[in-house]
Length: 78
Image (cartoon, rainbow, N blue to C red):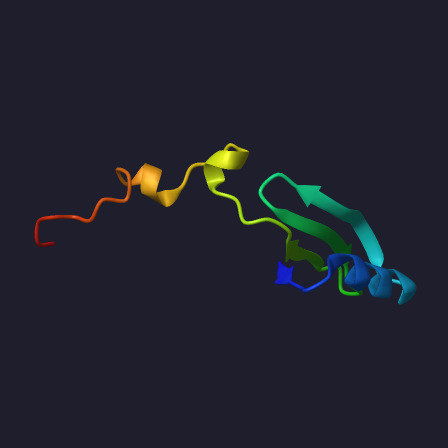
């Protein structure tokens, strides 16, 4: 996965250059816009752009704080 500044412009350049597009640019509920291609060697690449800064709970995920007891610091020495 590779982060880019503008997924749509990147996708258009890749398409014009003959890339094998596996999935068109799509918005995902976790705040990313992504598309995927396959290179000449058969490797698959996903290009992504952040479009929203969302807490995992906003899209059905779970944050690390929720998994570790609400993010409270550990009070005893480790």
